[in-house]
Length: 117
Image 1 (cartoon, rainbow, N blue to C red):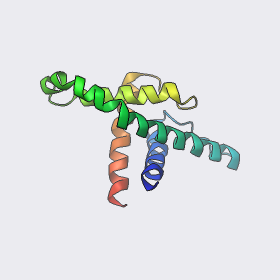
Image 2 (cartoon, rainbow, N blue to C red):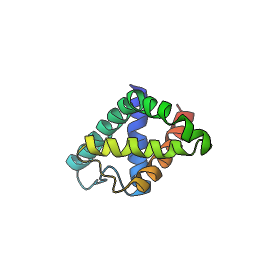
Image 3 (cartoon, rainbow, N blue to C red):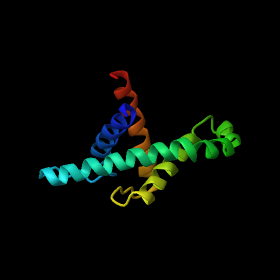
């Protein structure tokens, strides 16, 4: 449970930093509550994707990862973010490049949040 809360906070912060992802509307309590639910749903969907689909893609892309010295993992993370974009209606990522940027920011934020865990 603590993992999902940390991921939710990480998604909210990454959306604020990158200006994509969860629409950050804090003008009223109802809209802020809705934004938190979108971030929570996105965190759950990303957790499921990262534990089921991502390992298959990582296994298939081993040769490409070896040639690119692991940098292709950023592209795979971007595709997982785009998949979450398709599954969560309110979560919006405009392009693969923004998805890669979002995943890098999200990884750094989650790393920092896990330090203070």
